[in-house]
Length: 295
Image (cartoon, rainbow, N blue to C red):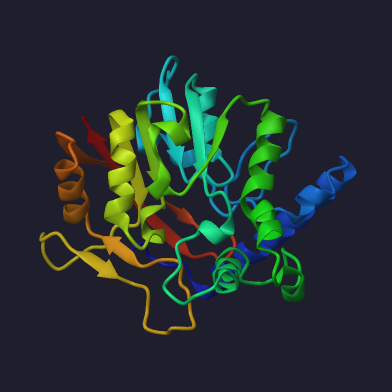
């Protein structure tokens, strides 16, 4: 686990994030994009002309850690769970033909049996806006999963795609439902999965759906726990409270991910690197492993 910053430094970063978001929204209003002031920006994306989204994750300085090809001309790339679209737009900038996959609705989120969409939305809000100052009041969100989906996922992505004049294609499906028919292609040279499996109740089923679509390299980046020994293990982190939906249930260790990927048909799985940073809404430090699985 990365070393956490002192509380006062965390507070400073979170305060600066709120300030930056408000300044960005003022700029949007001045440009006539009033609706976009409701959006939540998962990624920092430079849209040109000094317009930079105030994202939770700023991955611009970490790109070299992923070891993506500098020139991706002629490559077909599948970006699974792309949110605001930072990686999709970067792949396209490097010349790839990109398909971005995202959920068709918030109702399609995995949820523990008996839990509701509203509980998921509450958890998401606490994750992305712990100060509860950036997105509308709680009463505005009740029963409005479709609107919240637009604020969190679809609106920000489409806004960025329009500003960047990008030809990234969007596919709407759960990870379990990915097939050549849903993504519009039999296979992809590179498949990227970032922070997706930990949000699935059935990570093996999710991997098994994605792997047949990869004819080259699958890049998987997420938190990978350190365990007491090298035995493959998957930690349950969903808690015991039936009224709480943590939207995260399973943390496979590296040995588990490597063996699963090789059992699913890859000849080699390596840790290509790690990337780390600060969650800008809270000041908390994070670290992610980057695995490359090759055919």
